[in-house]
Image 1 (cartoon, rainbow, N blue to C red):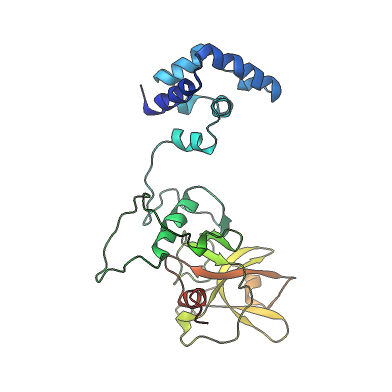
Image 2: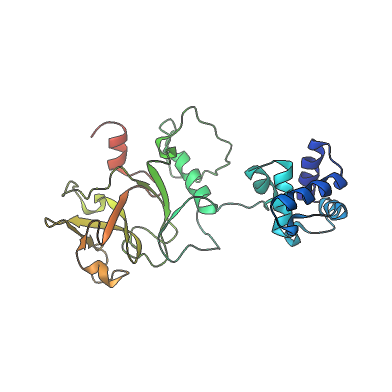
Length: 269
């Protein structure tokens, strides 16, 4: 019996139901939800559990109905999903064409794993080395980045070339929404210039910005590519805040926490 079939059978047995009981409740559920697709025959339940029918071939409505009846919630979906490894180096499914905020899925899982490196009690090794993420680490306190009201997750899109020499497509970002004002020059070297996630009528972009005196901002090219075109022609012109552009927030994490944000978080600034 396949592992996923065993899990479905375990869910059913936990309720003490026979497959005929599942069929009976599925008919009630289909009536409540006004959709006959949720009806699942007793024999079909048995064939799924034994592996005679591959779960990938089962209609989503029937799987959803079983998850609802067994009351497993989101855990049921994650348990039934094929096991997979998350690669921080290469994602064969690639990323979105445009920079966007992410709420869930594999990119959010990558970010959650990367956030674990930001705990202050973690020792930094003397030499660079690979450390596998097991997902079993426990922490005594919640890191500030877990505050979803303040921090957004985003992923750099394939077409977002504003900082291509610094951020490659698929880079995971954490954005601090409370710091959404473009500062005057308060950095010592160009590489420490703060990055911001901006939202325009033609897409989101992660970029450097200059604040101009007339209430506009200007997107700044990376010095390593002064002649490279920005990803949209309107980014070459000044953008009026709250009319042409909204500043979503400052990018404070892109695989490592920015020094500026770390100092703010530790109360040094």
